[in-house]
Length: 523
Image 1 (tube, helix red, strand yellow):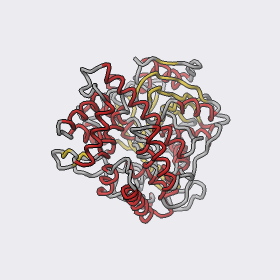
Image 2: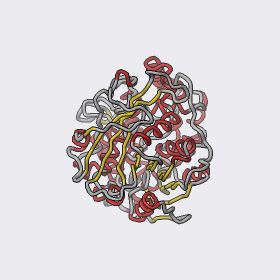
Image 3: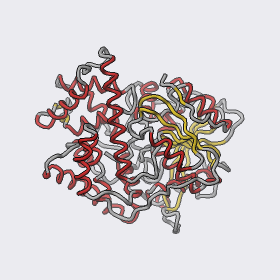
Image 4: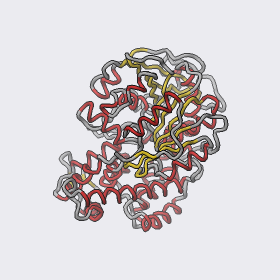
């Protein structure tokens, strides 16, 4: 499992379920299976940094994602050609960064643009912007925000529609997700290690020296080109999960260009690769304990309430010898069950789905667990994948100059299995891709954003993927951070409750920083 897992997965699912009556779509735009290219062989109309974007209407994007556009919203798209390497720009060596602008027909007293990033790394900001355009009644952005800002979603370099990285075969994706999350024997561990090494070598053979250019710092510099492309003198930004790391990096590089910044679901840039992974193991273990407590208190909603942990542990153990076969012929191995478990913990609403899925496995029905797993991995009905995890590895590993050796992973697997019984060993093994990743690394900065205005850092006490403890750490590192707490469950907080929504909206619109130590109740 990647160090920084897929962000706001459950949140986006809630939006799309309400709008389209289905689970999160796994949309791969045209060209997603092509290698990253320069703008010279891409979109001829791409703007260059320092010039205004050339917008064109693109109602087909919401149509493809959701089946329709939101009432009263217009959708326009543009691309910006950015240098592959901002430290040494070379003529002809560029990537096309795609973005969408969503504007409300009722907009008035416009402040500027609000740039969004859903995290991942690997998540599509274009998709996020479309989902959020459907308004607060469907889990999207409040009218107060869409009436004052153009909503700008972008796919970071290497992601989705922006010169996408695609180097993991469908077979290797299936094998990776389906593999035993905790390979105990030396033979089993070596098999998993060999799979990760093959994936890394394949990506290295395809992209070579380009791999280092997919780093967080390079993308943060792209963001400043997007700021000028939309015509803003200063940036207003809303970043979720990994998007908080991206925002924090931008604030350090361009503090004078920040107008307002909300970082929801904090990554702590000061942590080592290993420490960040252990924090995530701790976060998921805590989230599962919260799920178990809910399950015990509400047996009517949880068919495995008698022993939630035992039911899941037993299901994974049985899958090692006699996995349940799905109607499409896929077998629910322990790996797929684990991925489904991870997926369900991103929102409190996923708890009921998890309980039903495990209950289904006990009755020989794997449909529920595969729905959860496929939602997380963005595996499509035809068996193919979007480039979410290709990009996830490319960015995480470009950033990581301190990835552990295989021997260290093996040691941590044993140690973390004892400390975090369900998640520790699997998350330790999940560090292996960057162990074998080829090419140079480009670590992001981890310091103060001197000269930046106040930045709001939002944390959720029950967050599994970016544990609450990171919130104060990120705020302190930046030196201008102000913590806003949601005492809720799941990954990220905005716009989950009226309290959080009002605090964030007041800051984005009027630059009113939430009261120091402000905490919002779960409901």
